[in-house]
Image (tube, rainbow, N blue to C red; front, side, top):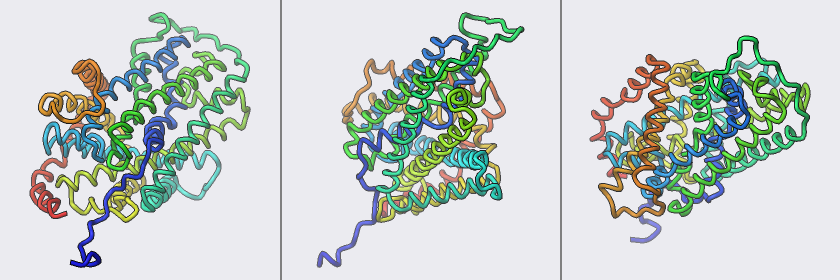
Length: 450
């Protein structure tokens, strides 16, 4: 057969992303508007500056510990889709499907929510007053989707540039705050009684722990692109650990800078503590500066999540766990139908406001996905001891046990705090299971024909 007449393989994901991209998605996945709001919540529960900074260090350490089993499993199963392919290999197709489903759904709901907040920030800047926040949200999702459809090289470069700009902006802000004078201390409220040294209340401490955890969320982003990152056997580990360490340092520096300007009492309960500190340095223009930083951060996170979600459905479709059409890849490497479906879902949620009900219940899903990976790392060591492991966690299995226990404890705290939302979260997690069981045979046969 003439080579010109030979059948052509369908386009697939392209291995064109480097370590810089891996670091960018880890840093970009964590650093967002959360760090601007979190210090106010933390200071409401912890009123000692040294303990506040220690809490942020502990939060980073927890992320590093939880990342160890993820890096081992991710480097051993270097496929796109995050936790999905790892859960499938360790516990079978059904566990893999459920893990992939909750990962995909939380990305779609999160994108809708973040895009609406983006619209609110646009209005805070006095821009586009004639457009609703929902319409602005849909416009952002559409624009980011277009960037992703142009190809992996373009979307990857945009994420790397955006993460670098975000990090640089926070560093500049911290330098300016450190150069500012300390504001006059605020008197403690008359009814203030410290229950513990440095801690206002147990409830406040628990809330501080929760918000710190949420602000570090996103450190697992690198494994979603394992089929596109060069040398995933080593770069997944480098990107994950390097990104967490860099963000931990950034968070500690930003909090130290805020505490240099304001006492804990002055920022406790603030909805935008970093903005309050910036007002001391920048004056009236501070709101514009902080809002612009938040606007850029939100757009960058939507871009990242628009890249990640289609990688989940791509790998699921390749394995016969989703419709085969979702495995279609454009010549530039973008799983184009996956981008369209994920972005269409996010746009629908944003336009109708239905994202609010999902965002309220999705916190356990992210924790469950990390917990599953910790358990997968243990199981794979047992059932596949000869599986190549480019990076192995120390103190096996205790690091994975600690990581799984941390995530299980956080799920328990969230569910106890809102049992109704916890029940709804569980129902949503298993809702598509009957459809999967009904169609998995047909999907599998279609996948075998790819």
